[in-house]
Length: 69
Image (cartoon, rainbow, N blue to C red):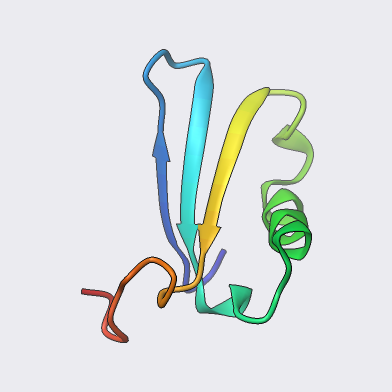
């Protein structure tokens, strides 16, 4: 996702949490945000990627400044 700050974590290399901070999420519902990320991941979701939780925020929601600090 261009312009997004993406961090993926896994404690067991099976279950993953993707933390995505993107200004493009502003004004979108939770479902709309999830749909955008699912579209970006593509066909790997459900094949190579099985257990993925999403934490999707705008920079403001994540407490980041405009410069990303």
